[in-house]
Image (tube, rainbow, N blue to C red; front, side, top):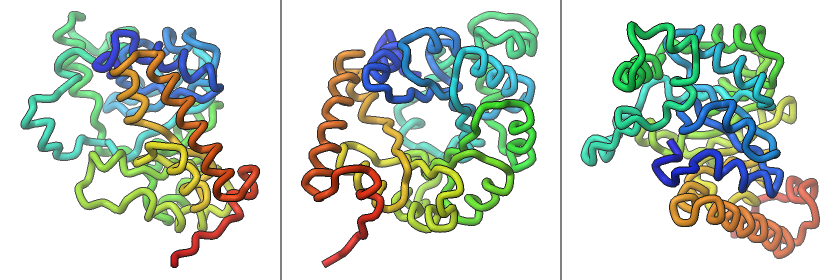
Length: 282
């Protein structure tokens, strides 16, 4: 839905991220199609799958992502239905209903074949009906593993037992995330969940971290706590709204410089040393 911030949306972000060889994770509900994003910028891209109620549509997206050069599939497991977002209701904020975020759906033959007729109204209605799927479970993940050769990461893991189950199912990576606090009110914060998950995973697969990353020093903290990499969300969208591609590029430059400076001031010269640090309170 990045067109809410800038007309170039995902394309502007991919071009900015490419300058720093930072992967861009394209959402299922993106403003541009998988193919358009795949051709924008020469940096790595991953595809974030929101499982649809019609399984064949989900698999179609994954196949398209493979063909467009995506390097991984990120399955979002904490948004099988929308949380009760009171502010969205108060402000009448509903991007899907307003026609945003349909780039992948309106270009997908499998999805379009599910509609009685194809027009703007039926596309929007079809997306809203299909985008939530509360029945998502481990059997879907196992089947997806058989359907694609791409690495699969689960986004939304907050409990060590789920981390272990994911490893058992052959998942290739985890993303510790509470969806920016937008789903379940009062849920554990991502940073509190991270250490125990990193401990039980014990290096078997990568553990990535999402939610609350705003600057380089935030990244430093979560790497010390056990993450292998971090995801950035809201800050780049704010930057996109302010100055498009140029704004995102400037934010990333600032973020990387802040991270580098924070490492120097912490007395470490590389990521290996950083991950060997211990948190001491006092």
